[in-house]
Amino acid sequence: MGKAGLIPVNSEQFRQLLIARRQELLDLSQLATDSRKPVELDQQSIGRLSRQDALQQQAMAKAQENLRRRDLARIDRALGRIEDESYGLCLECEEDIAEKRLLVDPATELCLVCKT
Image 1: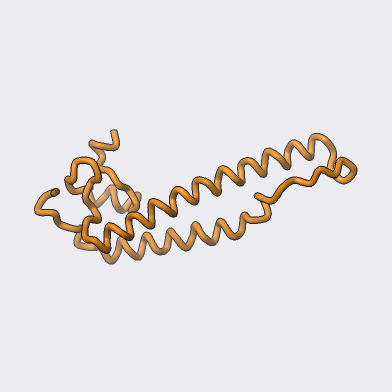
Image 2: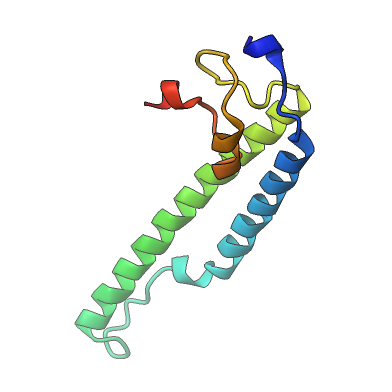
């Protein structure tokens, strides 16, 4: 384990950061629901270039949703690590992750050495 296997002193602070970020991602996902809907095939109401733009926007919205889902999964794993008291330890080397790194990304799973 890391330096005495300690959890960062502010684990409750990190829990609150993670929960707030999780809610933000869920809210963004809900707002973007319409942009991920299928593009209509009606050539009468949408011109060819407009349709291509709509398809591109739909693809970008789907890609953003995939990133949000990945981030939500990372957040859920981090919240689980807080519960089992392993939060703040690198998943590869089991050393402590710097608190400054956790403040930048509370869901990070690796220390800076293992990340690089």
